[in-house]
Length: 106
Image (cartoon, rainbow, N blue to C red; front, side, top):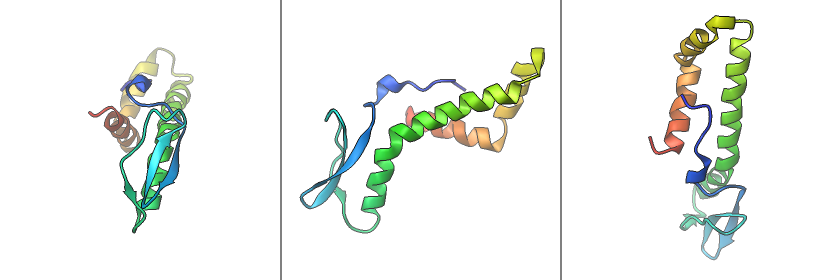
């Protein structure tokens, strides 16, 4: 599992939700990114806010992985790499790995 995510592949945050006539858009602060029309109907507003939070969520998950790896290997000495390899097989880390891979289109 990579320790960092390729941030150059996506538009940097922060992103925000804006109203655009009959629909919502998620845009980056520098206007280098904008989604298509997201409907106001049903779950549209909640979806727009989730999309807008994506850069911060990605950063937080990457920090969590680094922190978990650091704390999980403390005191393991030469066995740190082996302990990390075992921990990566845990359901939590498999879920994190899958989410990070999805952000990279894998």
